[in-house]
Length: 243
Ligand SMILES: [Zn+2]
Image (cartoon, rainbow, N blue to C red; front, side, top):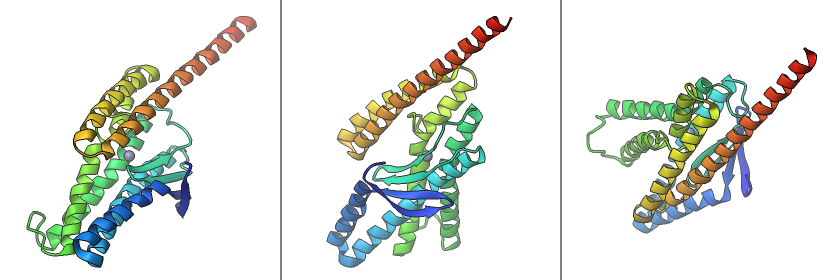
């Protein structure tokens, strides 16, 4: 990805940070500073850091699940709207895609359960948070639940959309499943864009990302179908030639 630099290498995967990502700590650090000076800025920065660590672990969930099937992930890039794990190929079987798609949100479920455990052990999950640390853990728990919910919206190529395609591909052809998932994804992307104007402008960026991602994936599926048909045609001609 252009305009990104390598920040670390973990388990053979490059962790890259897109330059636009840096706007996020700058913006929230500034808001915290305005509210409560240095302490406020540090609180905001530590929360953003913890949040994107959760996003990163989510992407590692996908990458390590892909590795199970021999699919390599050269890098994970952090963007202001989230993380992107770049896999070298698309899983062959729908069951593989299903497993890889679920692995990301499953990591956030694990983190949310761990945070709930910590909060319960230190004075109840629903008790009013009484310290900055407890407030942050509480907020992190809420955000992880939000990440699970948001990622599971069937807006292909988001995780929920990949789950939808995988389930459809178990019954229909890869192309039919992709076409349906892509149309659903693009319809939902239009909804995100409209919502973005009234709520969070970040949704407009996500809408663009989903809309163009769905189109690319559909084109890829069409090419894959054409390639498979070509291979079948070659095999058929060879068969008739040999007989
Ligand atoms: Zn994901």
